Length: 193
Image (cartoon, rainbow, N blue to C red; front, side):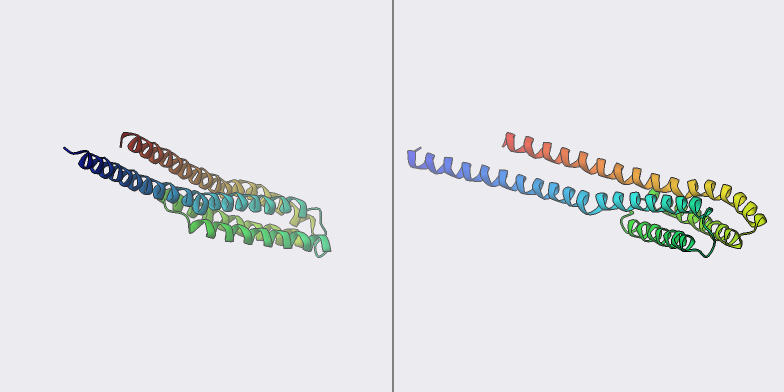
C-alpha cells in the first residue's frame, strides 16, 4: 500500500472517529441540558412555591393567634384580617401553581389531601373569626374550643405540603443521578472511541 493511501486512510479514520465522538458528545450534552433545564424550570420553582405556601399557611396560623388580643373593628383587627385573607389566598395561588408541575400520582394525591384539609380549615377559620368578632365572653370561650380544632386541622393541611416538598426533592435527586449517569456514559464512550 502506498504512503498516500495510508495517509488518506489515517485521515479518514481520524475524521470518522471525530464525527463519532462529536455525535456522542452532542447527544449527551443534549441530555445534560434537558436535565439541567428540568432542575431549573421545574424542580426549583416547585420547591420554592411549596415552601412559600407552607410559610403563608403558617403566617395565617400565627395571625389567628394574635387576632385574639385585638379589639374587633379596630385598625389592628382589620390588619390581622387583611393578613389572614392575603396569606390564605397566597397559599391557594402557590399550591395551584405547584399543581401545574405535579406529574406523579403521589403529588396529585398530596395536593388533594391539602386542598381538602385547607377547605375544612377555612370553614373553622371563618367560624373562629366570627366568634371573636362578637366580643362576648361566651363567644371567646367558644372560639377557644374552635382554636383547638384549628390547630389540629392546620397540621393536616400542612403535612401534605411537606410531602410535596419531599416529592419534588426526590424528583430532583433522580434527575441529578440521571445526569451523572449520562455524563459517565458519555465520558466512557468518548474514551473508548
